[in-house]
Image (cartoon, rainbow, N blue to C red):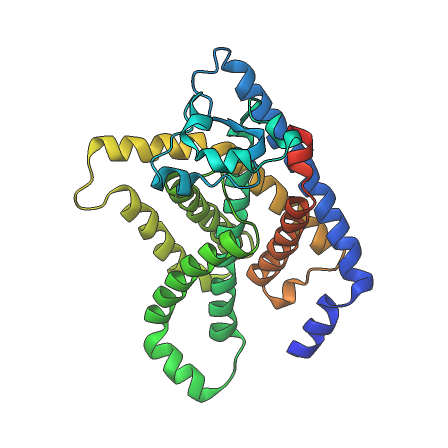
Length: 306
């Protein structure tokens, strides 16, 4: 089948819009589950000693990494206002000043942004892996295949590096993630690598496709290398395992969401297996990312949590 036929099919609004609406509805359900989990976690912490709080008036400008760089801590810090420049407070209107002493727990926002990071990290990797698959299996040009067969292993490594850069661009361009720090991003990307391995294993064994064996090995070695690098300490290893454990709910939610949207796409004939299951998985993730951007810019989460 020609690439033009695939493009005409996936850009047909009569087919794409209903599929997007189903994906968006499923995403809202996932957001609801995340909010419920965040609320339960908050209730379990009766003393609030582990909470991270900021003033409601700072919700739109808060950036965890910027605050840490400036030496400002948000961990149960009641003196946060006193540490800000006085002139910035004086410039606020009276209605804004009324919000200064209302503290907002940012843990639900951090949990939701962890899911966003999981989605963006997975999309970035799937985008480059899909390109790898298309070049390897779908381009029938002799000159391309000679070059590809010689350097495809190095090209895969380059693709993985580019995916990390692309992931960071998504974090800043699509949705600016403010409530998770670099350590949590690193943990989520490790969980995302496990998620991609599960996708590839599923395709390899369920669809009996031999094309992903080497890629699976690459990702398995990446995860092992992340956990057992040459100067790893027991504390670092234990911390990585604990972080994976803490982020398992996000992994399970992502598996459930993507599994449903891909299953529905195949059954509704919007997603075609003929273009490759990996490419179809990428398309489902792109629809999810569009839904995340809409939810973020419509400020639905902030309206609910405030």
